[in-house]
Length: 425
Image 1 (cartoon, rainbow, N blue to C red):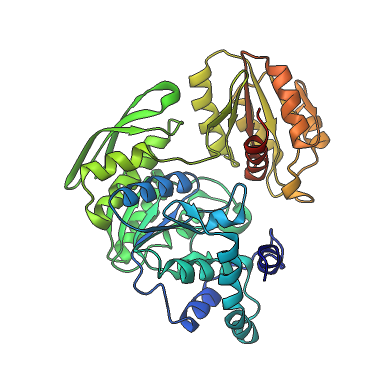
Image 2 (tube, rainbow, N blue to C red):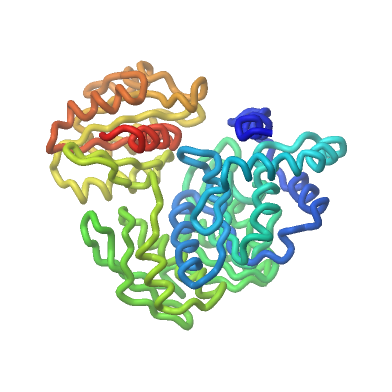
């Protein structure tokens, strides 16, 4: 089986299709001898910040001397990014071999329980591949929590970053409903760490009590102080039960990143009691592509994959704080599953001077049509295809002293990031 054949096989039910539930994932893992049974690590759920928290935690654990498996979602450029060992994606050859070895098990489960989905197969394949190669696992939960394939795992520590409105079609129309879905990753006796607030925090607290889980809350048991360093990120201090980490350098941009880093520092402490040196080295070396990532200058080009109103608003506010009154042109694309008007409200908080609407080739047939988006948005917008041409037009509009923000869809961000790695912007 070639890598392309493996991709075709795992996604043949449709990249955008899903069947929620953990039963098939658990059945596959059990048939494989339950390779997850002895794995120790962290499940990370939440509306926003999961990837950044996971990246910070992975980097800290690696600095502490662990072999770390990381399962982020989704990928930006290559599907192999979804299975990582010590910061390196699985090779295409290993990806194909790992999948091919599991196909007989997938077929057995299909006969009894129906065909496994892409995400169920990916979860089982990642666990089977990572279990013999790593001693810690950081797993980003996909959609929600309760019915996500990754919730078949119990790694000992559960992190719920925050809760906001997103994926209401599957998770519910209120913060409380969505919080219940995400808090369902908490297993009996887990250590739980959360950045949730308000009614969402109450749901997490209730779930932790029912599961006899110890709970640390950001702003209560965990405190974080941050001093901005402009385009260099932040210097932060994180304190919690039994630890006080000071003068930590965090290179990630965005006012919300110190909170994500604090959750990671706390998780590393309860998981392994890592020392100051590992925390400092790990945070300082954290990289998380596609989140307020600067990929070019004159004009400055920034990528951000925030694709729900809360994430886009936070990223936009943080960016405006960095650029002040400098000119800003946005390149924007979005999937059909999202409401344009809701995202437009968030987009306008960025105060763009112009918006260039486009669509990513990797989401062909699943993205809103750019001309329709421009018509809905109104004055100051235009539609340009393909995405590379949209970026070129945005750079012209921004001028050499301006800024271009690419946002609205991780597929769009990934496409532009890939192009930037092969073509000098």
